[in-house]
Image (tube, rainbow, N blue to C red; front, side, top):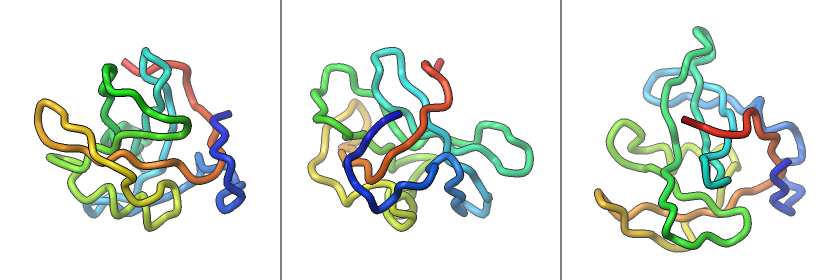
Length: 119
């Protein structure tokens, strides 16, 4: 379990469904190799990977329950969708990546991790 110390989203967040880019997706949660949380969008119908909503910046220090959102390229607009469903807060700060500054957000609620690592 990844405990976010907030009672707003106590239900199993692995059942969150969002509409993103005309695709109905379920959210899944995994770890990157450095134990940071990855948020994955899975096509509800095909059960195939649709997109990854987070980016891993290993050298950037994160506080407890923080994630870096990939709100550019094929996932542009995902920040607003994840805020809308109550999964994350508005950005608390930004981190500069090789491509673009990315928002750092806090998770809301408690989630269940699907797999230990992500390739």
